[in-house]
Amino acid sequence: MSDARTRKIEARLKEIVGDEVASLSDPRLKGLVTVTGVRVSPNLSHATVFYSLLAGGDPEEAREGLQSAAGRIQAAVGAQTRLKRTPRLRFEPDPTVERVTRIQRTLREVSGEDGDGNGTQE
Image 1: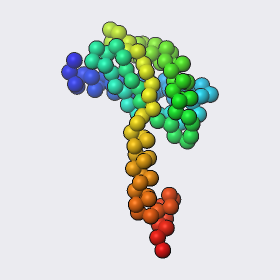
Image 2 (image 1 turned 180 degrees about the vertical axis):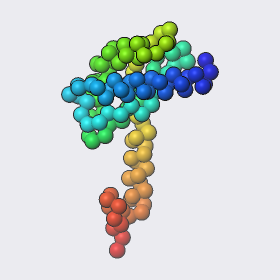
Image 3 (image 1 turned 60 degrees about the horizontal axis):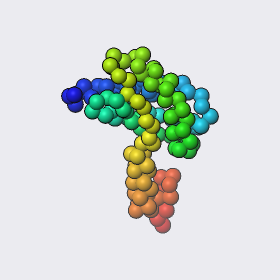
């Protein structure tokens, strides 16, 4: 499969899954859950959905909530796409978010900021 087609499928899945996740009311999904990306396997049998949590929430608890809704979300993907086979969905916290947070923390430490943008240097 071509890279362009794969990217189109991933973008479409991200849109559909994002809409479905926004409509979930599972108590394990505390805070705002955002779908940040989707990666499909070469044969489209599996898709890893990356998500981030804003405004708190436990990533593992959120994963459980998302995984429990995977069947419903997968049905929506099947109904809204023209794929022969609907990819099986797996949810993972987006590692990029943690990396960015670590980098920002390090930059604040190096620059001497106290976290709210005000320098602590005297």
